[in-house]
Amino acid sequence: MSSTDWQAVVLTLQLGAYSTLILLLLATPIAWWLANQRSWLAAPVQAIVALPLVLPPTVLGFYLLIWLGPKGFIGSTLESWGLNHLAFSFEGILIGSVIYSLPFAVQPLVESFRQLGKEQLDVAATLGAGWWRRFWTIVLPSCQGGFLIAATLSFAHTLGEFGVILMLGGSIPGETQVLSVLIYDHAEAMNYGAAERLSLGLLLFAFTVLVSVYAWQKRAQRGGRLC
Amino acid sequence: MLTVNIEQQQGDFCLQLAHSFADDRVTAIFGPSGCGKSTLLRAIAGLTPGLKGSVRWRDALWHSRKPRMKTEQRGLALVFQQAHLFTTMSVESNLRYGMPKNVSDSELAIGFAEVVDMLSLRELLQRKPGQLSGGQQQRVAIGRALLSQPQLLLLDEPMNGLDATAKKQILTDLRRIQNRFRLPMLLVSHHVEEVVQLADDVVIMANGKLVSSGTLQTQVDSLAGHSEGPLSVLSVTPPSQPGGRVNATDELLAWQLAEQRLWLPVNAAVDVTGVSEAKTRAAGRLLVWARDVSIATEYLPNTSLTNQVVARIIDFEPAKHVAETVVVLTVGDQILRALVTNASVKRLNLQLQQQVYASFKAAAMH
Image 1: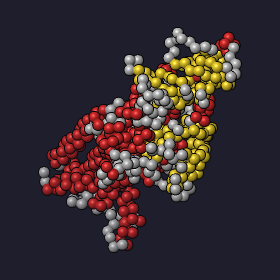
Image 2: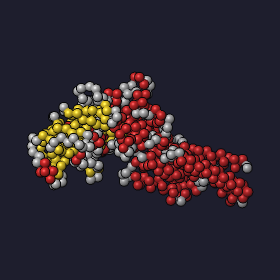
Image 3: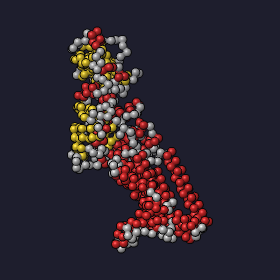
């Protein structure tokens, strides 16, 4: 593999790791709210979260390119503060990646929180546990299966991202050229050998991660640990 | 004193209740399923959103329009119908969950070792909740609630869905807890037996409203009206003359009802004051359903009925069925009701102030 290939591997893993971390932090309160909310507001919020599932990635990528670019309201605001706009940057594709994978993190957590039920948390409250203690001692251990699935799906989905990244980040080596984009570049340049190597690597990696998760899930279900 | 003046709307159902509960005894909240008993308990615990009104515990305002004290700050514990043990933790971790941190066991009003022994949980400490029976889980839930050192213990039908053996064990445990820790308790139940065995006071509810309230003795008629039929609650004491109390061969124990001797199976009567080792000197309480009482105009020497007491007829009340009558009797200063057919009243020519013999099977006592 060439140094460009290795660079893309590292960049992809970085993007996946950061996206997953941010997604877990962001998706947890959203999922908690959705799992416990009965107001009319829940439906529109759920729809916004799920939009990336139905929108073509190019649509999302296009809007993000406009908003985060030098003429967009976010990009221009950043520039007015003396910072750089976010189009064609790692930070830009990180934001795009987080938004694009949001439903993959939120949905498993919503299911997990719904299965947990309110009763154990009510019991904990009557035993004097405040909100944080209830979250760390009851929600987190009981819903570890949901968190694991959310993290895995977010990570795996980020690895497979193409449209949003191409639209928003282009293909800048070391900055926005992730594996999926590099495979496209190799294929376009008729460099099928390199494209095949990277594709096979990505395929095996994704398969191994998913097999591990499902095996863990089965074991946890038998042990009654999965929420 | 726990003073509640609340209103809670849930769809078509409205809980509306104003009452002051004593804070030094067990109060049973009795009523049919769906009458709002559990909602009331959850409202007191601060677990129902949209509650209107106020809840005040002693000097602390737990709930009002503003401020509203969080559940975890109220210093109460609630045992639910299901144990809801924390499934990822061992029994010991469950028990220790609500215990104050950095306080030694000896400094606690309710110590870990004592609760573990009292509820026979020592063998279970390292197990996970999934490895316990329903009764064991509920005992752990009760222990867990106690160890959080509550000022008030709320019990929401803790024996619901348990088999007879587990139920009996938990009733015994709760009585023991009350005797040992003198903890104010609110017990939600729709079983008269549980109410009679545990409660000092009774609040009767129907359709989200309070129907009547008072001490157990004053609420016997109301309990009867909202349960399977007329009943009596008799207070029994150990015999005034010591010795010969236990008939070991027949597993019977002597009790005194007014001036008369009763023989009941060991453990049949409820110890209302004593702890287990004082079984032979504690006072007891009997629940006797009127349908289990029969009347004779003279002493019956050849009958399988163990206990016959001399009683006097003071009233005849109509029964639910037109063919029956409730005969109200006094035994000393206590009321005993017997459900008999109108035909029997006529045949025996029962009259007010007549002296009769009332018999009831020991098996019908609790």
